[in-house]
Length: 325
Image: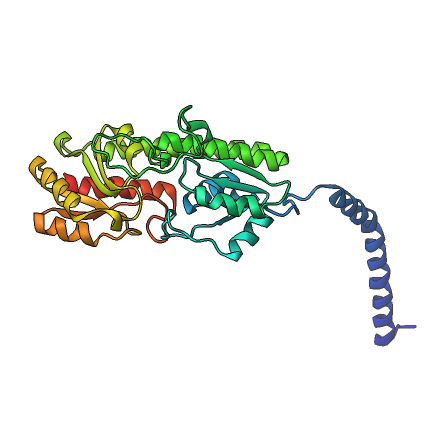
């Protein structure tokens, strides 16, 4: 008897169903084995939350990011463009400090006014380090004030802006690395690797700065600024530096500006430099009257084209070369 089309269809369905069950049953042990192996392997991405780090300045925050990468969450108390010397903390700063595992100050008197905020709000188990700790001379203590002095010989006495020398910035990074390891020892190897990578970049930065400013005639290697922040830069690269005031440029007298500009013009130095966060009106007018150009220079990281330490230092070197050559 010849099977009807319906019978053939029913036969095919039964055959397909039976084969599917066989395949499924054959594959089931493999699936279970793979699932068991997968569940026993650790995940590549750690579920651990990033380490909370609070720094006093944006520049320090940038260094922390280079060492900690995605293992850290960084907050800078003094925002970009603000003057660290006159900054006033807010209740939000106290909250940020209270949540941090690691607190980082510059030291040397630069951010001493923020110590009260840190001591008053920090958690009991938080670690507080000073980035300049390895750089402080035996006679230069943490409680010394940031002196308001005029330096005309490249002296950096009382100048806590050690980062203006990239070799000192390496020591900053090393101190930060050790601080991160103290609060997060499980990721010690990562912090060491990141530090070595960043150290290479800072060594290259030092070479690039020297190569850029060495194009300037030696007779013009005289950096004149309002702010006493570049003594370590001057010492590193063999420059003279004159700073009119230690803090806000409004503190300087017109007479001192004019006297210095007359000396500068007599020496044939074509430009003086001002940081954006300081009032440059007095110097700007006096320089224009003397036929001397006023150029930009930065002592800290800000938004825009100097949003990290390396870019800031390269910007400064190029600004000096452009206006003093």
